[in-house]
Image 1 (cartoon, rainbow, N blue to C red):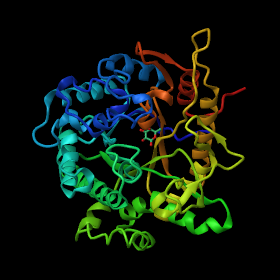
Image 2: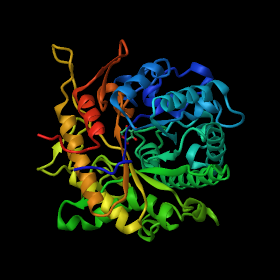
Image 3: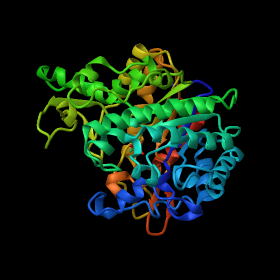
Length: 452
Ligand code: FCB
């Protein structure tokens, strides 16, 4: 198994999950500060106040990336560090932090891959309606313009949004992510305004005319399978909700008809104004795919137990699938399946896998080492699946492992560890795991098999 010469091997993180220093450098409040400080929302009351303290340990973390041999590093920019109140002039200290990060990456020959929005919306914008309000799409484009103007000569790859499905549905319908709203109508509004924000930001960034730069968006995609024959309709609706509701407007310029029909009683999609879909579907240079699992589903009309209440379906774990510490099924062939499908239905389009990884109940042994063999197996099988997809014609150009560091796993707090590097939270001490050594060899050999 060998990958193309310029294949980009990387690792990913996100601002609120690693930075800490929530009041450092004039940062304003985000919806995740509010949410994590609300009792009962995050496991054990964990917050991102300190997280991995990456804000203060930037140099040390950059050195770890260099030691790992990364070709690219995907990080996100915290909007409330740049615009503490969500609009207006840039906060210099905030921009400086990301400038130091990008410079540090360049010095180490690591390609920066910034994501402009990984869920930490300025709280002031939430107070004015957040993503349920169209104004937020406009504010997002303004913010994107500020960051792009400042850093676009140093970073080639730009991602507007991370996983609009999660932000919309877990944040606005299930209420298990910030801002914790519980309304299907609001989840639809958020979906459209996030996508519109992507379109407007892309337009704003393109107007800077940075030739050679590549702009894209990252979606969380999951192939969907019916558990039994009678669950076929439910599976189609889940696919509509998690995949097509985003892929279709972005890559075809229309919302899927079955979804518009399905949500008829909740919304008439009157929030879609003339010209919106043209903006949303303006061409991207690549698609970012975050992959974690296939959804095997059963019909389930109960709002208590449904995993996707708005489409009446529940996730079941196939008997033959291993479960990760998140309780998610590990089925590597599902990665190849979704990549081939996206390429066939929406391609051809260059794809970067912008996240993939596994939570393991890691612990340091008596020798101080973290022997995370499950992570090595998981990554190895998923790299192979990506390679299979490439052999089937999919233009996969890079792979960002989630995550460089153990970090704040949203509603799960610090209880779930995804890192190649173990973080001891009380002291901040970093310990590269066995998977870190293994991955550095994969990068070094460009994926090729070890010669025996
Ligand atoms: C994705 C998120 C990322 C991380 C992984 C495990 O949905 O984008 O921040 O939490 O899941």
